[in-house]
Image (cartoon, rainbow, N blue to C red):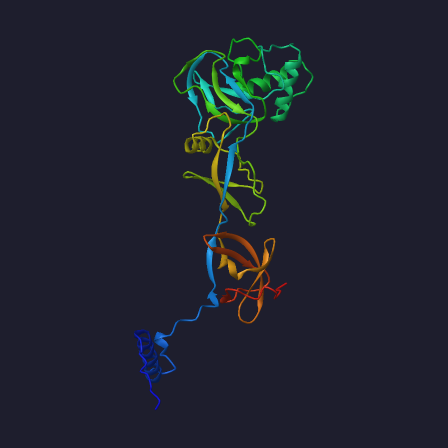
Length: 341
């Protein structure tokens, strides 16, 4: 007779049997199709296209242009009874910006500064220089190097009217303050109303060339459009080369105040930006393919579009559509081999 031995089922086998059984029961009672509310969402393949204002901001270094400075000197002793340092930048020959003892002192641009009182019959290079400037200012004077009657009358009319009765005929040099060009730019006044000044005292400082702001290294990949510089609370328009218009005295003072700028020509940081924002389409970086320089492609589900990349910031790429209107959506990962050119 055969004898059968009893086999012992260990704990491991028992646990395995229970797990298999439970799985079978679960599969039998759970449907194959889960409700939509509990299914995992598929990863998005495209995104809506948005449009944002864009000013193409660039951090730049700027500095004040330099120009040779000239000191304007008091023509004679006297008290300052009028002075205009609010002039917006420019002084011109034949005008007056200050008065001494109630009489205006006329600025005069001559190739040789007048250095002596001129009397009838005087001749010299300084007489020629005076006559040339009188002609430029519109007076009917013959440039012959001699102090004749027409030169005397014209010079006195320009300076302070006809000579007073009993005075020696001639042209006193004290009627004029010399300036180095027919138009100069006021850099600052050194005397004020009420000051007593001696002849030769510095009244003001001028430059022949206007002071301007200049971007030191102008970026070459800017979006086309008019631009401005912003620094502190100030701003100035600049041309395509990054240069501002000539600064009026009030603007120059404002620039120096905003930037603590001295005349040693330091540079400081500013922001160069479009004067008016443009509309730029915003896409994820992955949406742009076939990038060649600044040109590339984006796609929606039907076609590809040529774009120009104009900037990027914080995971956003700013683009302009080259030959078509923007689509409403773009693919996140378009076919990189599908040309749009």
